[in-house]
Length: 151
Image (cartoon, rainbow, N blue to C red; front, side, top):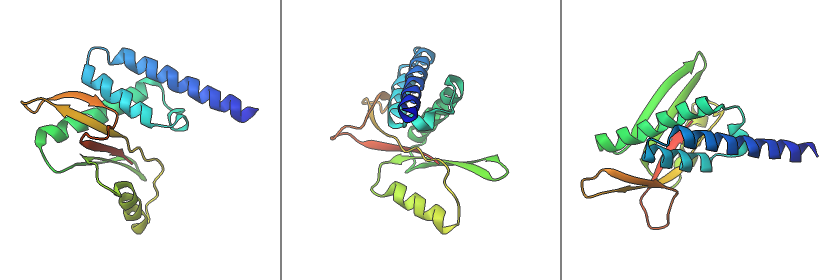
């Protein structure tokens, strides 16, 4: 009974976060699309410790990484931030490649590093003839996919 209640509570929390994020992004369509895709990829348990504002700040940061990746036209974007004495956050934006998560997990293991949380949403990004992003969507079969990995 308790598991059902916790599950329902987590699901309600996720729905509330989604609703709040939609309100916060209504003036920026691309950000709203990105946030929707990212939140969809997250499980309810991983969202439980977030408030609307902490999740929104995280999503804005990830979105800005995506924009920077496309502006710089590099093969990938890698950002490493020290968040505390013993914790770092690694963000990677790149075209989706097979075994990316597996490779990252093994690399961390090789250096005896512990992964406490990994988000790995995939998004489809559509651009116009001027190479400007016009639409961000959930992964589609025939679209170019991009990994927005945060560890």
